[in-house]
Image 1: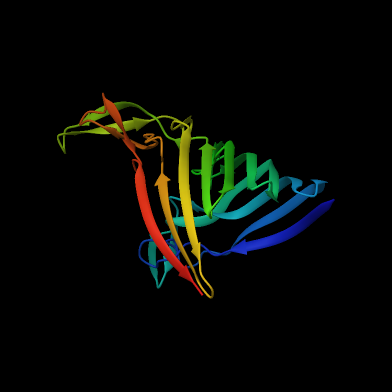
Image 2: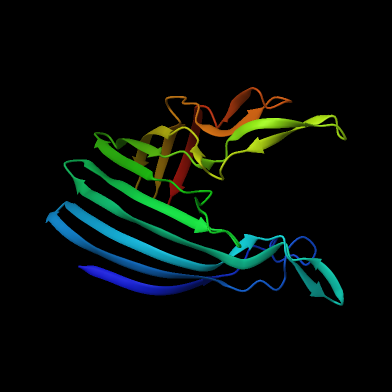
Amino acid sequence: MKGGIAVVHQEADFQELDPVFGNPDLELQRALQYTLGAEWQATPALKIDTTFFYKDLDSLVSSTGGSVERKGKSVPKVYDNGGRGRVYGAELFIKRSFANNFHGWLSYTLSRSERQDSGSNKTRLFDIDQTHILSIVGSYALPRNWEVGFRLRVGSGNPATPVTGSAFVDSSDSYTPIYGETNSSRLATFYQADLRVDKSWIFDVWKLSAYLSLINATNRKNVEGTEYNFDYSEKSTTSGLPILPILGVKADW
């Protein structure tokens, strides 16, 4: 069994502390973190680890429309420390040590991260909240110093704020979007499979290795964002990297 309690502080980002575009008077953000879990060595080669976690967040940096007096002038506050939030969930980790020419691990996290912005009583998801995160990694040793491996990653799409319509602005002769609730929708599920092949040549005092990796081996078009036409009546998605081969050589002494 294992557990822990921690108090953690974090400084605001440098752009949030900028005296022109941010607020140099921002205080440290704080998190109270609680974890409880257990490890079990099921077999000499198999270990199972599970952890439950909860974080209580306060003094979060949040946008605000208020003003503050600085050097005798009233200037926009831009940011303050009025945000609050919480993060909770559980993680399962299964590790297989090298046995019968195979080793690898599996990790699965189920979580939710919520926050309230300064001056608001509404709860919304953090911008990078992910409900499900699954990773599977494995490698198999073959004769003559060959080795093949794979990595599979699956995750919930990041939260997104939908555009529900648009309005025409006469002064700029353009359309402005009308947004729905903040982070009330999600991008498509992320999926990526990678493959790798290694070959080693072992000499008396050094070793030469060569490898070929295929990143995104299935050439999946993972959605990273949404683009709209001029009046926001049509939309399309932007995708991440396509299949990417990488060839490398490494020498060890």
